[in-house]
Figure 1 (spheres, one colour):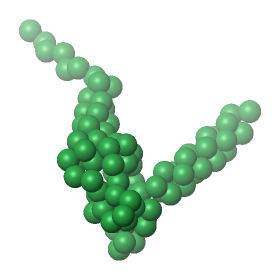
Figure 2 (cartoon, rainbow, N blue to C red):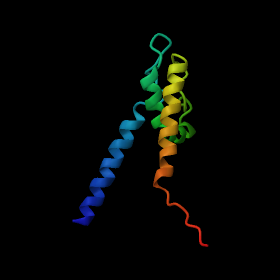
Figure 3 (cartoon, rainbow, N blue to C red):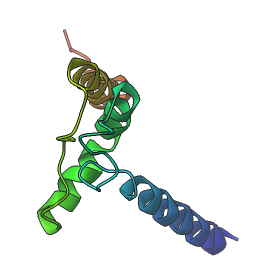
Figure 4 (tube, rainbow, N blue to C red):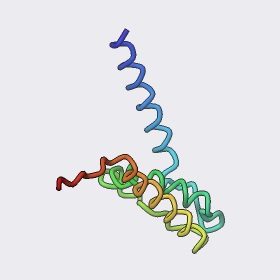
Length: 99
């Protein structure tokens, strides 16, 4: 039973990563006529680590969407990056000091 669970988890992770990779900055979805807005900024902030890795292998993929609507996109991107990476500190163990 445990072996089947590992395969299921691997399949779910693969599908999840493939889904995330479909909406990364620089994929051609956003244009000058249809710039990325606040919610795209949030999404691109959440998938920033995946975008960073993919940008090494594909030259058209970027960490940040070039065609955006300005400060609203920046605000959404910033909120998502800070909440995602800053939230990791909630799961760290606190150091105990010996006296």
